[in-house]
Image (cartoon, rainbow, N blue to C red):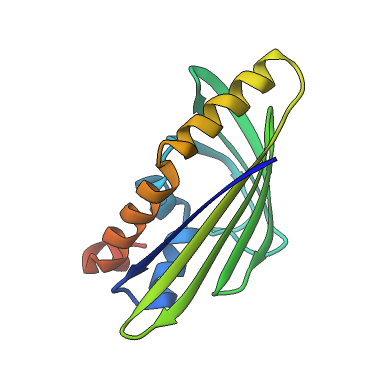
Length: 151
């Protein structure tokens, strides 16, 4: 299992930043992978909730069943099971007049040819800076008053 981490500081309040992590409409705006929500317990990601998302990775249409392990206003922890499994975590904390965000994604290897291809593509995407770029988009959105109000 390979783990990627990224960290940034944003000007937005940590409560507003956290909303960008749990609202599917907000997530679509910063996610490095386009996706559709096929199912979601509730309107936002909540601890104990589940979701089903589909998108394209390495040219293949893939689906993931997402279990929300933790969503407490400071930490968001997800497990996404699909052709590859992902452990995803975010931590948002107040920092002066803004917030600090730390993100981590662990890619668990999958069996079979397509699983190995998808794991390799995901590793390459993350190694290429996709997580850092996503945090940059989260920061821009959290600092945008209109965006924060829309979420």
